[in-house]
Image (cartoon, rainbow, N blue to C red; front, side, top):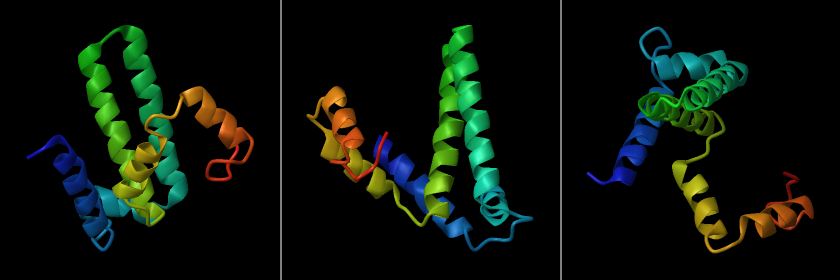
Length: 115
């Protein structure tokens, strides 16, 4: 199994759990509770990544980043978006300077969003 297979399988599992009983599936429970609950979890996991980094605990940074990525995948599922949508955006940005990409977003050139 390749590294990307792991993410794709996780995304598929999350998608499949959309129809599960919220009492039997953590993913179904998050999705049932709605966007605010998912966003709260992402904020919590983001803070935990930051704290682990500040503590200089590499193993903890890895664990918390995994939790953050998981919850971001749940958010994508909430919006009926796919992992491929994010990967397509990253591919589109490949070779583009981060400074140039951000300037284009501010000007409304990339995806029409300010950032």
